[in-house]
Amino acid sequence: MPALFSQPLDHQYKLAGPSAPIDLSIPRPLRDEARAVISQWAGYEPTPILSLSGLADGLGIGAVLAKNEAGRFGLGSFKALGGAFAVAHALSGMSPDEIASATVATASDGNHGLSVAWGARRIGCHCKIYLHANVAESRAELIRQQGAEVVRVAGNYDDSTHQARQDSLANGWKLMSDTAISDEDEAPSVVMAGYTVMMDEIIAELAERDVRPTHVFVQGGCGGLAAAAFGALFDAWGPGVRFVMVEPDKADCLYQSARAGEPVRIDGDLDTVMGGLSVGEVSLSAWRTIQPIVTDYLIISDDAAVRTMTALGDGRFGDRPTVVGDAGSAGLAGLIEAAQDAAIRAALGLDAESVVLTIITEGAVDKSGYRTLTGFDPLEVAERAA
Image (tube, rainbow, N blue to C red; front, side, top):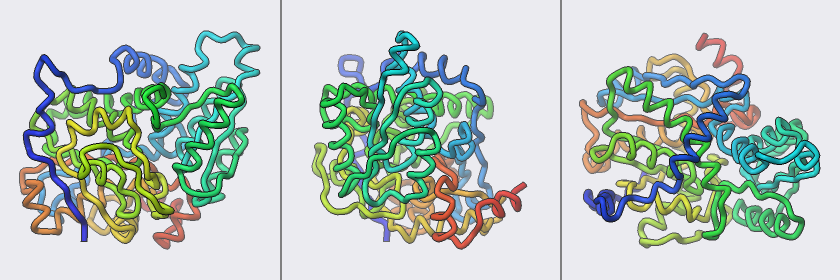
């Protein structure tokens, strides 16, 4: 069964007065820079917002909108916006010789590292990506194909994060981390600025459609995506939207932090099938935005994610078949689980008038993993959807 933790309904607005504005973590000039830079990259185009009317009907809610990041720059996930922009930002103003001798590094569950490696390849610098023991070798190989060196680290994501930080400080490398473990870490805010390009696309398209969501379900991880998404959407839409964080029950550091009222680190191997969310330590820069804005925290099982991936790939709800990766399924899986649990449905105010926005953060980046979890070939699913 899913578990829900809801903050008092006035909590997310308690800092919204003019004397104490909510800290959106990402300065507006940095958001503007990200949009200006990324929109000029070859292959840039806004990703689609799917209207999953069959799923909405099945759940008895007004509409389900899903921003589908599977086609982003050919890398298969929203992460393409963040890590690559952080590399471009960090090395801007350098001479060609300085760039060629520079090294960027980061820890990753797979997709962020792929983005950093792609960004390093684009600009021409060296790159080292730290992967923990639970990251699939197929994801490591995708990173190597971008010309980066993969460094394996025993333990979990948090162990790889600390190792990448330590080695970067010792060697003078530029750390492109997407999680801030100290207040001095600047790169995570730059990474999040890249993610806001996706949110600008959402805001513009929904304004054209004259649609305003009542709920936004976004997956957790270290909190970087959620802070970028919720912060940008709160900035654009203000009060009146329920911002729901969704996490795996095996890696719920944000949920546990909300219950504690402060960032906490959870222990264990964090071994969830939702690989990109296998994180036990909250990004401090993200928490500053998340804590005052998020209304509800929802944790789900691995089985819920797999059921959602399979159902969407099969077109089970009557919508066009859609390839959704493991971490990419979390927002939709949380919505499906919540809508089918009477108590949680009522607590979240989900009804026939609700308009829910979610983000499919990745397609089948790990194709072999997708086949194992769903029994489907992602290419065949895409063919049936065409």
